[in-house]
Image 1: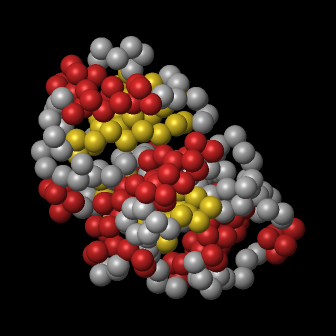
Image 2: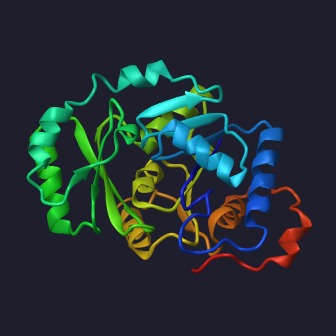
Length: 273
């Protein structure tokens, strides 16, 4: 199974420009995977409609599966919600109780209603979190009961932190494991590409994991710490960015790649080491 994050991974929408022909090569790769019968899964913090909107903006093909809202929702190609996964996550979050606990944190603000979900309560913080503030937030979430976790990432375009409170049975890793299990696939038969902090838990699945070349240094540092704690975790870091980095990662893990359009011969590496 092929799986990838969207923003900053499949979508070249960070401050670093994609190399010439990158999107064409990305489309060609995804089309080739589909023709070969390989299931594809797009894994995103976006809700489904916004994820599809981004896909249309960049002209990329639809996947076999969608994992949305940071692993709290799974949809098939027709947009049907996986009710088995929804039931596994239990009752909706107590949003009122969580907000009572978190509201005293200055400058923390809930995200727009469309970006919330029954099992996802999301917030903005206007700058990157330091360790002390993150520890305080984790403590405040835990006061609302066991079985919850805080997932954080950084939005490069705005310079703000994105925070998601989820059931601890959710998250990108567990959702992707659920989809892979429906095919009888062991984690080692799953490839996953990412670029942000909320992608790192997927690598604990035991998949063929990678970070694209445009991954921020803070995420690379956290990935190194993760690998140091668990040497079985596989994380290849590409030199090229976006889809070109994904192609580099697939080659690293031994996938025989298709011939790419002629534009590939005219393009140099797209990323930074």
